[in-house]
Amino acid sequence: MGDLKIVCPSKGRHNKVMTKDLVDDLVLLVPNGEGEIYRLFNPQNEVIETPKDLRGITATKQWMLDNFDDWFSIDDDVHKVRKMYQENEEDAYVTDPLFVRDIILRCYNMAKEMKAYMFGFTKERNPLMYVSQNPFRFKGYMNSSHFGVISGNRLYYNLDMNEGEDHWLSCLNAYTHRYFLMDTRYAFFTKDNFMARGGCNDYRTEESMKKNTILLRRVFGEVVQIKRPVNHRKNVNYGERSISIPL
Image: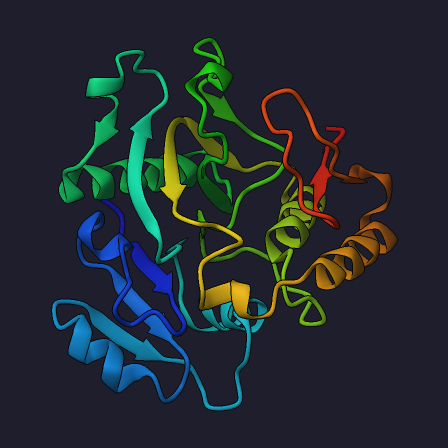
């Protein structure tokens, strides 16, 4: 398998890193000053502190682009992985950390083979959304909760954005590289998104989401749309956006 660093950015959740139980050899990337307490509560994991003047997830992801080669970023509150193609609920969930790592590495190696610079997994959690005739996608939105990049890319983040960085990178990747690799056969489930303390929720607000949606539209145009309620998702946060890449 390829040489891939699996990194878990985390902030203020030293005793609540769920992902370490699901992924082997997880590297915890934490703000300066939090390294000691993260090491105390997570002795089995490598812990890396970001520079002292670095603040926010967007700056953290840019630091990862600048300092790591091939990496896969995964949120600290991922608590289960589902086989979207498995109809039987009882057999649908992956619990073996080695299997989860293998899922990530296989996607990474396929992306390298097809010369894609971004790879990851579906944001959908409802197996009814899975299309068996189309298990891979090559354009659209890539959720930053579980995605990776490969060295040699020409990607960068807009540091004026304190959230929505995944929409920025999805649009920029489409403009720069035209396609990515998304494996829709597996879904990574995060817990209490938009509600848990710590992480991005310390600074994500409706006002910030609205501001960043406007910024995205100014740069990328009408591919960025205000998200509307749909049948399978009626609860939409004010300021959320969606993207549709016309390629």
